[in-house]
Amino acid sequence: MTLDLPQLLTSFLTLAGWAALVAVIINAGKFAHVIPDGRAPDVSAALNVVGFAVLVIVRVFRPDFDVAGSDALLASVAAVLTSVLALLSQFGVSKLINNGVKGLPVIGYSYSRKIAETTPVIATIPAA
Image 1 (tube, rainbow, N blue to C red):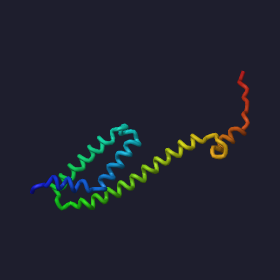
Image 2: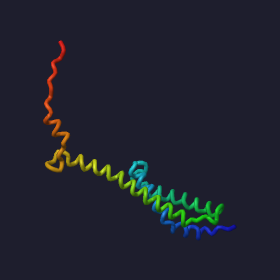
Image 3: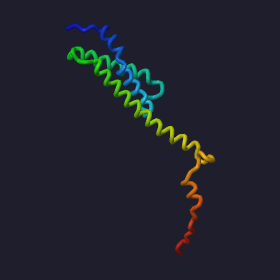
């Protein structure tokens, strides 16, 4: 059996699910500070080389494998991971904004601070 590598490369470039998953992996790595600033293109290239190698291996050993179906699954996984990453980012952004408006009139009101201000401090007498 012969492999047509240019044709396989063309097929690989159409795998939108794989591309979406690579983008999510890179963004999650940047969010977790695993991928340093400016290194995303290198990580993307490495992941795409790995993805192409996997496609070649799959075509050699399982030529009947449903690549399009697998790509659709990868797209679904990428969509779920994007939602999880967005939710985690939202938690962080909410905390930053809350810290930024703390103490401002109306929008920075804090019940816990109000309770602390109105709670009397009980003086203790040191033991002799």
